[in-house]
Image (cartoon, rainbow, N blue to C red; front, side, top):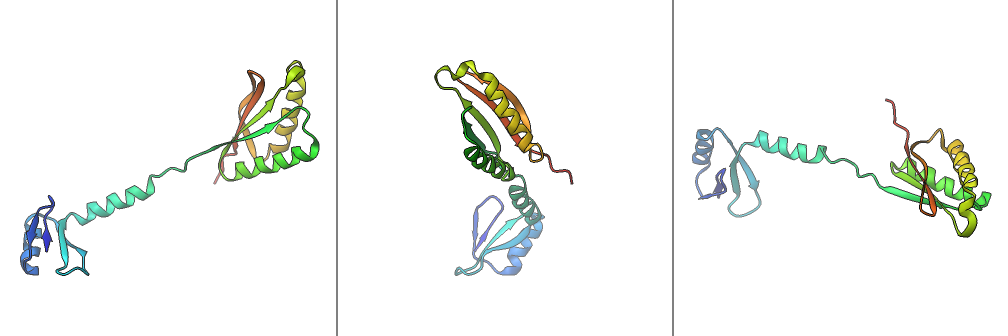
Length: 153
């Protein structure tokens, strides 16, 4: 069975005749389904087909996800270390991290304590990540964005 370049079925024919039709069209005769009865061949530009297949697989960028770490100004050291380990793991996986400090009740008047927590975090992650967005107040929470260091190769 032979199929031409515009997907029209030409029917069954001898190999020599199918090769002649392909040569007249300046294309290749490619066996698409060798195990069917009769085998199916297609007239196509095989070099162009290979290029398009290769191009499909190369240009897929990795999707970057934004992970979030939530802290409070009263977060104890043990919990802080667990969240720091998770943050470093997220960065190493290639994700961006949004660090949020939420204020409850009258804690909003102590924004300086949140800045101290962020300063400590900056010091702890300086060799792993860079600050993409400095801490800023958004409603009742303070937010900072981090991303991984650019790999220099």
